[in-house]
Amino acid sequence: MNKTEHSKKALVEALEKSLGVVTTACKKVGVGRTTYYDWYNNDLEFKKQVDELQNVALDFAESQLHKQISENNTAATIFYLKTKGKLRGYTDKSELDITSGGKALTELKIEVIDTGQN
Image (cartoon, rainbow, N blue to C red; front, side, top):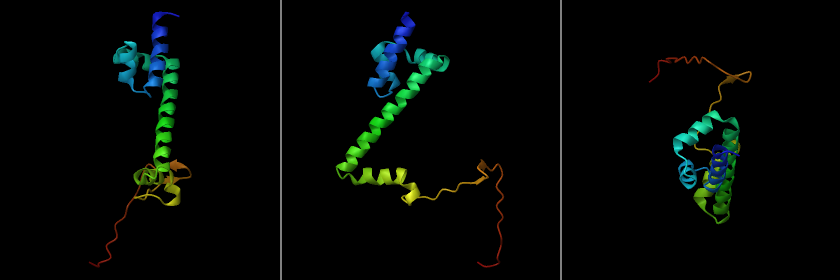
């Protein structure tokens, strides 16, 4: 394994430990951020490994959220319901899905009708 491949492997491991924080991982391994982004943008295997780590960080965050909910944290419970419970009506806003036959519409015509009433 050459030096670059060794550094990439070490960087992936550091990213996993830092939950995907690029600056922290780069400092730990001694690789510049510019080098990291060059590798990320030009090495599909490295990019794939890094992208998979985003799920690790998301899983960790979700586990922390569930922990806070189990500790009766009202804000965490509300946040969870607003994000995961939308289909059950737990939302502050209404979302309008403008599609036709599963395809997004490219035009939307709005007609304002004056009823003559104030």
